[in-house]
Image (cartoon, rainbow, N blue to C red; front, side, top):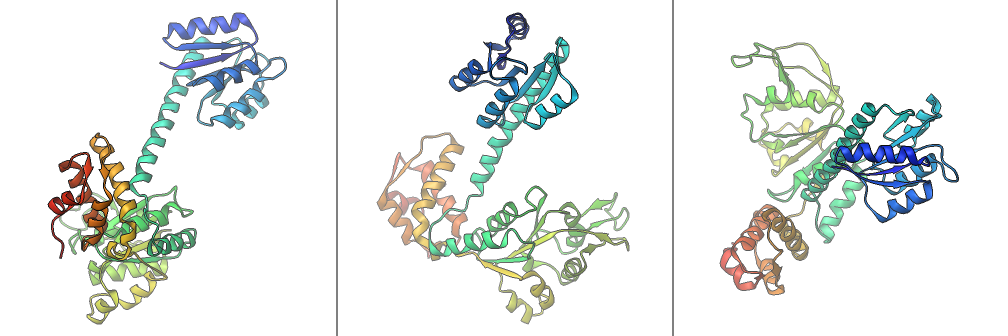
Length: 387
């Protein structure tokens, strides 16, 4: 259960709270004033604080300020026998989880403690997940080409400018799109990804714009499309070069007028969406072949970001190798391998046609198949000849 610090200048209340909370299997520490509370807080880790407001020398509000300053995620429940609405509001504004008046309603106290602990667990879990996600989407590299991409992201992300991301397969175009969203003012809103190449041409309009019930044979109910789902946030149209001309026309209208209409409906729906697109194709060549609309190209390419191939930034291979070594070993639950300098040099000789995606697969293969020290001979054996 939780480890709880109880702060109150009245011994009887401290002991009563201790008995109740320990009966509920919590571990309890006691402090009779603010100074002692801060001292204990600095020495040990607590899951929850119960703190009286009216105390000599340092009152509970001061204790709250200091604790929240040191750890804003810890739930602090304020207790007072002289409470009023203003005091409660002030405590909540300062970061307290809740405010309870004396004489204490023990049932309410126990429910509040339970809820505060559950909230803390959720906050911790969310932070762990965010760290995992941020590691997954780290942009690794110190080469000049990748620094240029990072600088461009920093400049463009805070705007609502449309961005066309180009580059070979496996270079990390989706990663660039995610960072453009994460560093934008829309980061708290949805990031919706659509792989235009993976959706059959006859379904792409329904996928993007939704459909009404009965719009076609399998439309058994109304469905929101990706543009509606991304409202307020960002939509990422990956492999847009594979989108049908008919769907391109509707996307163009959405960009021009900020409205869409579902398949089977004439009703316009207003949307506020930032559009990012990516392709591994040369869209100017596609325009010449009448496979892509020139007006849509100009709408999408307000900003152009080209993601370099791994072959164009081989100086990043040592950093990338260590990065994937750490991540993959963590996922597999094994001790990190040592990648010898000779192995790194061997990896730098290869022609990485599959770019970062291929490189990660090779590192994973080496980690699984090789001993603790990965040598050049291992790379030659398991990475396979590249043309």
